[in-house]
Image 1 (spheres, rainbow, N blue to C red):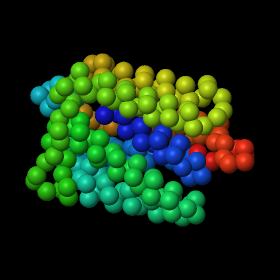
Image 2 (cartoon, rainbow, N blue to C red):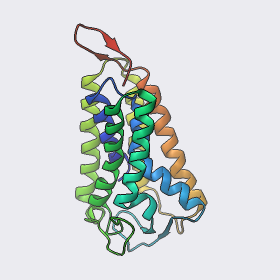
Image 3 (tube, rainbow, N blue to C red):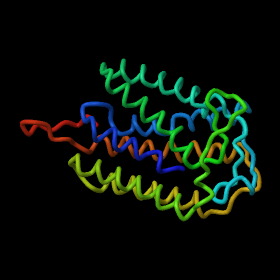
Image 4 (tube, rainbow, N blue to C red):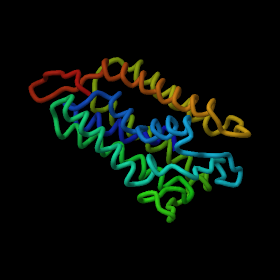
Length: 224
């Protein structure tokens, strides 16, 4: 799953308008992937190409205990929660950011083959929805568009910026699904993933600065 991870970010930003802006939740949504690809670049976590891994994604993510175990994800989420809560002086904002970060593991558990762990042990978990593209594809697009619609309904402002964000997300997802798969994975692939995260997050920051919520009494807030 790629853009589906951002669905909880849209929901969190819309559900608590006094919390962080959308860009913060975009970071939360892919926090453990930021960690994974960064650690993989220096050989700490590991992946390899395996055409037999799943029908949709030929990746064998065979060592990622620090980011994609449930315990590892929880540690990243807790660290983010502390930073967000202190920065915004708002404990609820920290909790929401942490929940968005933890949602990544849950969505990966649905889509991945068994390659996730609870705490880095030998037992692997994953429902393997990537083996069923006729279900996985509409599910990912569906939850993302539904969350985006919720965000748009709850906020006010120019439509251009969020539509550009959604267009970029859909473009990246199309590439992810339909571009030729690499013969091997390495530094370039890791860097490309981090670049995609950086682009989508930068646009989300831009969107967050241009969307407003109307609170009781008709006052508008720029805090997303």
